[in-house]
Amino acid sequence: MFTLNCKGRLLVIDKPVVMGIINATPDSFYGGSRFSGEDQILHQAEEMLKQGATILDIGGQSTRPGAEKIGVDEELKRVVKPIEKIAKNFPEAFISIDTYYSKVAAEAVAVGANFVNDISAGSMDENLISTVAKLEVPYVLMHMQGTPQLMQQQPQYQNVTSEVLDFLIAKKQALHLAGITDIIVDPGFGFGKTIAHNFELLKNLSVFSMLKAPILLGISRKSSIYKILGTTADDALNGTTVLNTIGLLNGASILRVHDVKEAVEAITLFKAYQQV
Image (cartoon, rainbow, N blue to C red; front, side, top):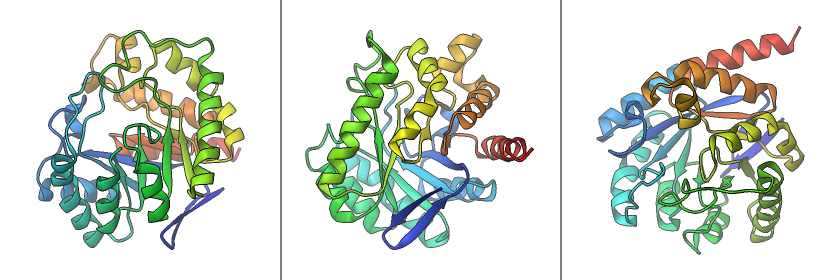
């Protein structure tokens, strides 16, 4: 069991939970996750919460391979008002801001976000880590080799599991020293990894339990699924459920997904399996 302190509000993870992805961006890799306008985003938040999501992850910038980087001001325009509306209308929801900009993190938390999900481990904004420490909110620590623009150009590892683990161990210690106490770890599926690397990490996911932190599995509809199946992201829901189930068996605490209902069902069946 893990307990995360979200500015005095506790998120207790005593069983796996679902994080629903809401992208306030026109260029995310999966079209079904793109939403624009406060009303559309609010409606999607309501649907995901009805389906059983515990966390809503709001992002204003695509981090798919080769994505064009946008500036702070544009990202703020995309996420601050929707987060404020979600927090006001659904106070029971836990909201994550998916950003690597310190200013976006601060303004999102000011209007209702509960924690920060950063793909860069603090490497893309030198003020991000100190800002999160001051905000006193949980932090998602993810591994990424390279940047979104270049990360899928021949990623290489001697041993992907041990290298990602070593990175997370060192960064987690640095975060503690910086004043961040509540940390979620994410091996970073698809972020500077080949298909083989991703499957090796999934197979060895239980190793990351030694970090004594919730493990976030973010593999929903990614190319490691649809390229093997010979389909597209639009047709990768069944494959996503299969890999999420493997992740649950190997210790995943949070499933970050585009499709909440199916992920919740996978967790329900996994819990029934555990109880036999």
